[in-house]
Image 1 (tube, rainbow, N blue to C red):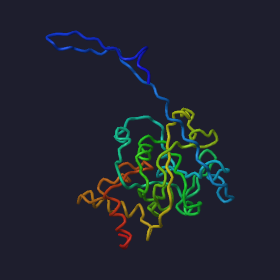
Image 2: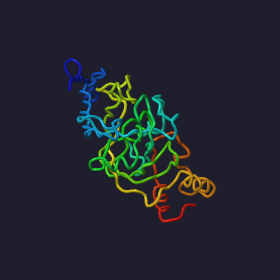
Image 3: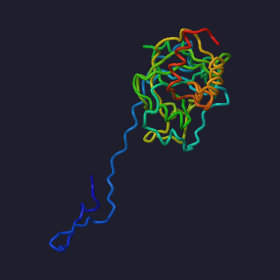
Image 4: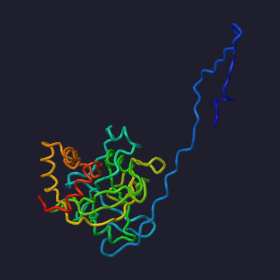
Length: 262
């Protein structure tokens, strides 16, 4: 650490038997090398069935991650949000993560990735890339190892919660932001200061029954009147976010598995 040209200077004057010391008023800064971009994760070997999301060996298997509808591709507006202010704090222990289970081309690439696709991956594990919304990115950065999330099928005939996954690697740079051929390429992001992050997730189990968006909406509407756990669920209050925090909603939704659809 350097301190100006030669360090910190002190001088003093004795008044009334007390020596008063002053510190040189120059503002001293220390410069530390920025954290190096983590090496790009290794993708598993390409598979003939899904060439769009499995790349040649050397990079990680990708998850195509978008919002509820085709118009909900997450934007890159650097607006300040409450999540931005709280980035780094663990706001939630549970999450809802959206992915598209049906084929749809985005800049010539099929963005399909279902929970069944995750199950078929080696070790049933893949990285959750393609997030291009600052608030959703900050939620990714807040995730901790072993935290659980609902795998939510979006932008499909019947959207809803298909299963459970868990976080097996905390946030690190999303390699797709640097790949010019990738639909999630961001030319404004630099490898020594990446904008976008991803986590690795692992399949835990399928839901005992599929919990549809329509069923969740019925409970949300009822809970708005009664103050129930789905009253402020982000799935309805911040619908465009593909990464959403959960608290008391998580246990309530799990309890629905044991009941007949409402």
